[in-house]
Length: 293
Image 1: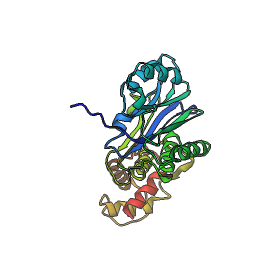
Image 2 (image 1 turned 60 degrees about the vertical axis):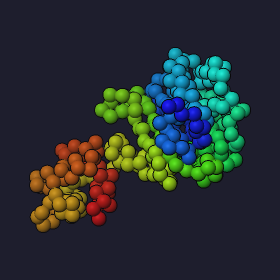
Image 3 (image 1 turned 45 degrees about the vertical axis):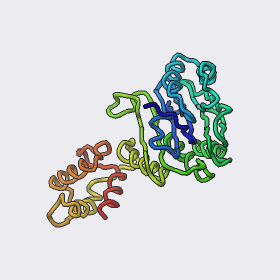
Image 4 (image 1 turned 180 degrees about the vertical axis):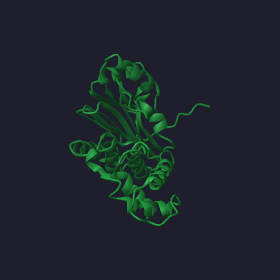
């Protein structure tokens, strides 16, 4: 059975030239909206297709931009060939970070877009001011700390705070791609997180992004601490988790190391500590202490 429901939503598509990352973030009162809206491929670009979404804009759009056709020219070609273009809305950034967008005159009010340097924000069935808030927040966020995924979700949160989808909230997602950025370096899917049905989808999505940074983020050499220096705290954690049964003595010996290795493995933190050496990422220590009190 074909589905032809309007995907009333607000989204942002952007490119970060520093890390060569392309990304899409979206929120909608529509179940699992990111499964339909979000498309991205390293070396090609990123696409958000919405309203009465035409997924060919994602599939064909990425293929065209990978051939170095600009986002604007790609959108022009796709919408010209689409007899239902009046009901379509799409935003794209191409392989070089050039952005473009289209809002058909048949999209439900409020509908519109803002195209900026390396990004575009768009939405339909919105409270007026939503897209403007997203654009301003993204431009400010990317001048500060963090990375593309953080800035995209910040933009979504600003859009929601400005009113968002006039029908309410249900689902959100963020996708970021870069060459060899995926698990094990074997694909480009650096980050692909979705909240498919939740009363506060953007807030939950932000939590998932934070968790992704914890599990898969790069270790900062400046945040390494001596295992010997935190041995007592770690032993308390290990006793609470059930990985260590002996008394706390503040000595980071082989028994403590093996217990910590087991706990780190059970929490999927091996990317941040491989069980060897005399130093450990303080991010791991802080997380374990918060989790096990």
